[in-house]
Length: 445
Image: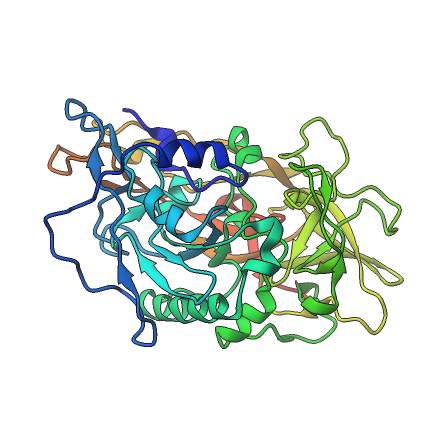
């Protein structure tokens, strides 16, 4: 079938050429003859319905269409995540892009920067093509926010924060989604579906989205939930005081030193040590960078990790299969102790693989649906390491390859029997097979 890649598409950062090309193509209106449905927004938001395209591009080929897939969620697939993006273009241009069936991209909602106005473009029961990972797409709602990640502080306005928070609270209550960083994802925390896809994953909303402020607006402020002796910690610097340096490496220019939501990670407990080299981003082993897009060297507010070691005012956590260090200067809050679950390799296992999707075992697929490969990511969990976990994740694959949902087995959810667990492997989440690990409460040292 066609368009495997288009199912996992999302708005690409620094993709002005692709966006411009799409806007020059005549847009096709979606469901033009249907009455506008009621928007799925809280009463406090005056949302408008602006339908994304759902239309054939080639009438002779039912697999050539845009820009989302019909479903019947949460009946077909449970909605477990909300994914926050930025648009990397202006609000009106985003609406036009999602209404162009040849763009092969969409999101459920778009939020305007100036006043927080919200447009709904895809019904939440349907699957938008937004996260870069079909497993996540099938289980998530995508919210695009007008702005550019490298300029985030100037685009992420108080009105935008308030509107997005109201919308997220409403959707989380409706679909029973936990209000934590493992379920309220940035696009930058969505895992690459395979090892080959890791380097192409997006990094929005980026280092200047104030996650601490956002969770306060969600009425879930990041607070200590355990004693200071817990091995599990949550990144939580004060955004305005957490002045960090970053570069826009795509434009080869320094960004202004400013408040950020991340702490830089080093290979040793020293500011002079190289930055952590993510094996998915830097398969050649080259050092990590201070590029804003280099998410592998940045731990973000709200993410939880297991302490591996402490030296003076430096803390090491288990990160992407290795040990990463960040500084916690005395008197300056960087983390809070947390309670929760962690995974450790089963006794006798030297290392275990991680995965970017929890797809079913081969025996679960009917003959008419192609079996999806379960391919390890370039991150392993080694003996002696531990990673934060939010427990089980559904094992399943939503097969939707054409616009014609009357075809046999098309638009079908395939459930598996294998059990996977979610882990915070580094900046991104990942999945491990439950049979490979022990899931235990975080220790108190």
